[in-house]
Length: 196
Image (cartoon, rainbow, N blue to C red; front, side, top):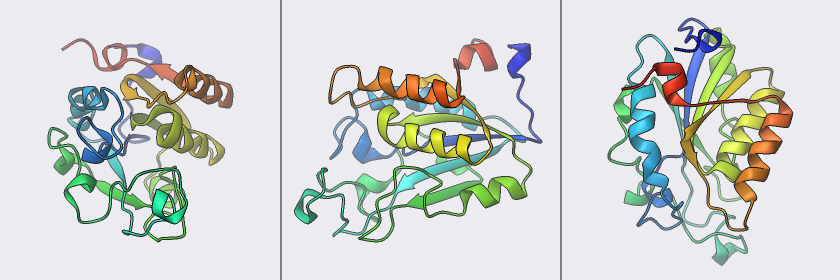
């Protein structure tokens, strides 16, 4: 374990971003190899005594981000549909809190902090540092990380627990650079939790 990044249960939280069926292979808005993050994040969700949060898109059927409403995306993660469920391999039952975002038709929300009570909940629990993984690197992961930093949290991004869409070559690298420049640290699971 990296001594500079020892898990501190009293002041750390694990934040898993949008590991839902529609964002994994076979889903409506699949991230290439998105399911590869599942076994990695399962290790983080197995941590004892650390506050663990899952975010999810939880859209109404007429959400403004959908193409039919003039948005850029196909319908995805419509609330109470199979595509909105967490990946079946993700041990969601280990989470202490589930945060639903973009829950009204007119409001888009890439960040887990946008329009939710997440920041207040973390502060209430004395959280100072957040370990972040999930989907997709250059959209909801990046937005969540940047908001967390703006809100005063220290952020460690788990490199082996994120995947991106990479609609344009270099999108993920640009997102990583933006997160690093904002103050995020990048780590691997093995560095922090040790090799399995």
